[in-house]
Image (cartoon, rainbow, N blue to C red; front, side, top):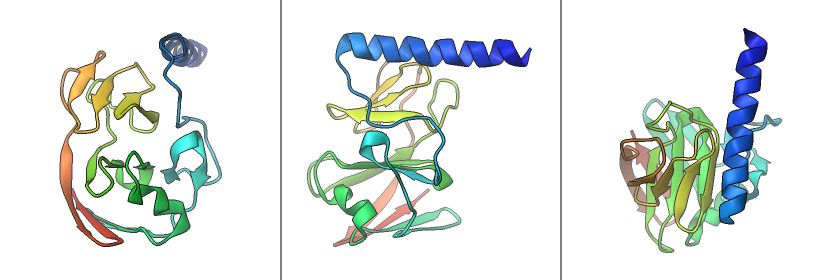
Length: 158
């Protein structure tokens, strides 16, 4: 049974990859394991969690840290696995945060961000950078969380 599950997962991921490749969408995150799977930056480069502090339902980000500095720029984004968050800078100033748990099947660690859209690489659901479901098997928007930004300090409340 485990071989069937592994084969099915492989075929699902391969199918999604082929679909996005055919559509010309580049992947900016990978679902492979790494030394530190708590945070994944664009390009799939795993990073340490320096500057990320999670306490209960509060996640604090210190944008002065090199591994978080891309969030200062429009289109900069981050997957924070330890708190199941997708964080994106939508316009150079406004930072928004959403659940990283896809509304289709609960996949929470296989995301890409391209053309102002989040793509769940598990089954191909696509969401706007406002969390709205655009396409795919998901049938609901991503849940959004409160974000307060004070300069380089960002506080996300779930």
